[in-house]
Image 1 (cartoon, rainbow, N blue to C red):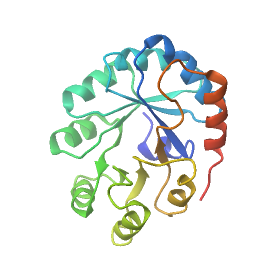
Image 2: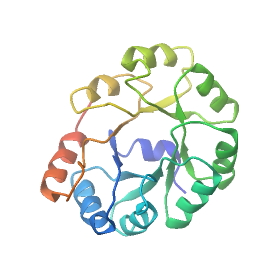
Image 3: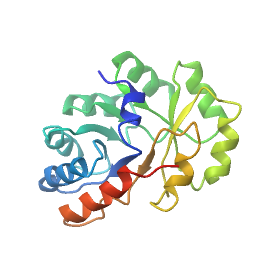
Length: 204
């Protein structure tokens, strides 16, 4: 199994995907991978999400994970569908312990020092900072990272192609989560590939 740090260092941006139609899964995955973004977070916000994961995982080069995983039941369903990493909006003991036991790459959401310290106590060192902008943005994460320097982060929530380099310039940030890469509606593969290619070379 991949380690979470391996997933987080595949590219500077992990696309955060909300996909309603399974038929869109493969074209979207192919376009993102072709653009240089192999790690794909399929959020469990739609009834199609688990089938989307099953379809996307068959695309060469795609490393497909599940987002919006809320509990051990979601974790089991995502892993059964083939998710190679798990992302959660928050950190709870039941989910964290189930993820640790499963040995899957796990990126739990944190919003403050208490969340991060609780994760560190569980043996976790890599976290999503979410929702990044409404939790104080870059200054807030810099302030948290200073005393908790062992932690590494993937800020997600409100990040744009313009603001991403500022986040990526923080030494403790390995990548960012981006929802701008695949707009709602019928996917335009060339436009998605172009946005992915631009995101793949973002740097701090």
